[in-house]
Length: 219
Ligand code: 5GP
Ligand code: ZN
Image (cartoon, rainbow, N blue to C red):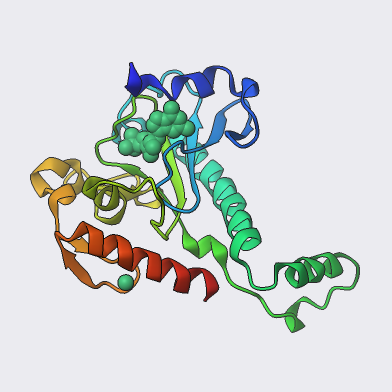
């Protein structure tokens, strides 16, 4: 069924072009989300068969597996940050020249650091996933995308419904274990960047997200 759509990437990652499968190795497949909810939205798919049909909260109870996943998400976060720098970095040509110069003539402490794009990437899982195969979201913070069409799309990435990978292992009594009871998806909208409230006004939120995206990328 539709909820099994991620299985094909895990089974045969080599059959997809690079604009779909970002990379694959023995243990993981990294792909572009087909319906991105931010300007950059990737998914990390662990290939471990004994975990793939588990809820992420259960899969991450295995400490060794969790560490492996965390390590891979650190790699993918770096990769995503590099992509954001290429897309939005100030004067990327000069930035690239600077990085090339580093290898031959390095006075690192005298060079400007540039924006830390890794900080602009969020990594985590949904408290109630819709797709069956275990996956971890790796996306830019902007929540700016044509595909962000429904209220639940915004809140699923902007409330505690989105559980950052670094919050695992979850405590026994963590309230996020009861996401429906908490009603995260039905909450009033709050801008991820400035904290302004938009009540239930999705159209206004979308307009505001566009303004915030413009500011954010050129910051
Ligand atoms: P979930 O809510 O289960 O955590 O997120 C599942 C994600 O998978 C969603 O962001 C959705 O856009 C994405 N998705 C659903 N079907 C496909 C598909 O067939 N291919 C890809 N690449 N992504 C998909
Ligand atoms: Zn705002």
